[in-house]
Length: 476
Image 1 (cartoon, one colour):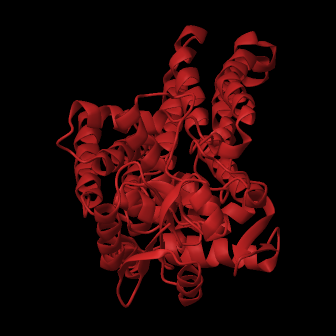
Image 2: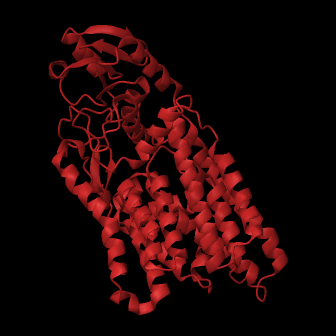
Image 3: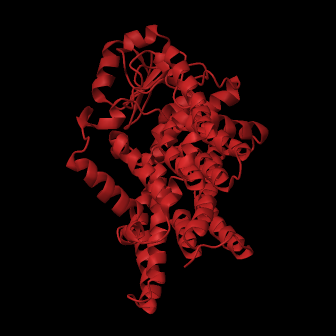
């Protein structure tokens, strides 16, 4: 099939796909922020909540963890100096304007909006570069496949950063003069501030320049200006946060290692890396096993797809540079989802267009069956991502009822800040000092489910405030 112009029929198709995608992403939109990867989501949400409660100080974002767990240094102000808090400020601002909608729901809605924007751009680019059929299937896969859906509605910066990145690609793609490059540059600069790892998508942006101007582009000042000005805000922010080392989490391990049983294990280019990423995650979890065939067909199909290949190379570069982070955390794969959807769509288009060697009737029957089975195989695992512990919610309510807003709380949860966030309290997500020292540092209560810790607290004559078969809460 030949590439097409964007027509009225495309608008209708895209609206249908986006409505379906929106409907799926609204599933359990109001659940407490205790689902999969809640430990990372609540850190993002806590920054926004503190904006709402204490004012929008974007240069000193704060969250709930005052301990040394993240950075190795005590962090009494709770500084969270990672990504520039643009995403956090967006949904915090929306909550300030419309407080009837919970903050966490706004966070999810913003992620949903930008994920749908990414789908729209993918549709447009494939329509122009490959075919309408490839665009339809790629957009549908991104809209409905379970892993895509879940990580398009999390309270994390990745979906928003990815949305900004693809808006940048779109504006540069349709630009006709250096003046019209400005929106693309602004959106790319914003995406880098939201999540620096999207810097790999500078490759498809550079490809668009070369496609439009050939090798003469290397003589054009605006080519270099585009990328220099895009990176300067990120450079300034990263240089600025060095002033606050207590608020900068350790990140060196994201390239080479994973944390297993409390110890870092090297995984850089080890067989385990390839098994976890390409077999367990991409093949089984994201594409549901059978659809991986379409993905590989898309890579080797002979369609006009230079821009698409640049997106694929950018995604692979991200995987291979941040091997530890990608193996450790599923949400890291959010940045490779566009490439997976794009080439799966291209592979399906190849089957339909290759009428000489493949029966059209067979393709019409087999493609929907394979996609449906793949969806169910993926859903079988991803459905559990929406679950959360009711005990966790109940514990948070107990802590909230026994403490005041200014009390500092220690939760014996090995660094997981979910309980702090749900209880609306600041403090430490681990017993990172002995209880007497924690008392001197200003902590008010400690929650633990460790029998050894309970015995130590009893020996130190701390007052028991609450106890049941699952946890104990002591006053420090």
